[in-house]
Image 1 (spheres, helix red, strand yellow):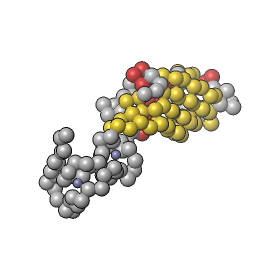
Image 2 (cartoon, rainbow, N blue to C red; image 1 turned 45 degrees about the vertical axis):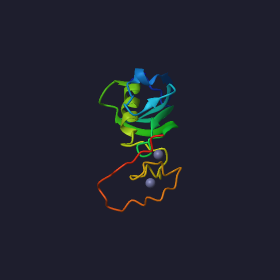
Image 3 (cartoon, rainbow, N blue to C red; image 1 turned 120 degrees about the vertical axis):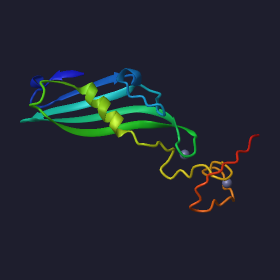
Image 4 (cartoon, rainbow, N blue to C red; image 1 turned 135 degrees about the vertical axis):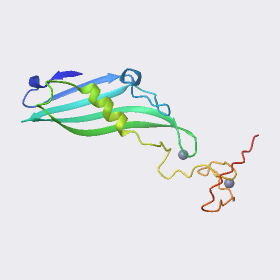
Length: 149
Ligand SMILES: [Zn+2]
Ligand SMILES: [Zn+2]
């Protein structure tokens, strides 16, 4: 989605594109895109700046960083960007969207904000089971006893 900024009409421009995550090169080892990525762009020129609004939509699957359960979620980002219109004449909106998508990734993906994770003692998923291990606070030696059956 490359556009010449001199060709943006005064009322602005709306564009959209559907790309695979592979083509966009946005995959991360812990994030799998299970749908193509829809990128909607609204762009408007105001004097010397460009106002760009991006709506990005897809679906991802991943393992929760705390409880390790497989999860899938809607991936949606709404991003406003202001760029200097004097910098370049041709801008690549796909490239801008790609950078914004990667920048929006959290360090850790969780199934839910308050995921309780695995019990450091018995290894059970504490969202599902209530165990009675009551790991002492501040204990650094994490010991996981898995029930292998
Ligand atoms: Zn979790
Ligand atoms: Zn436990």
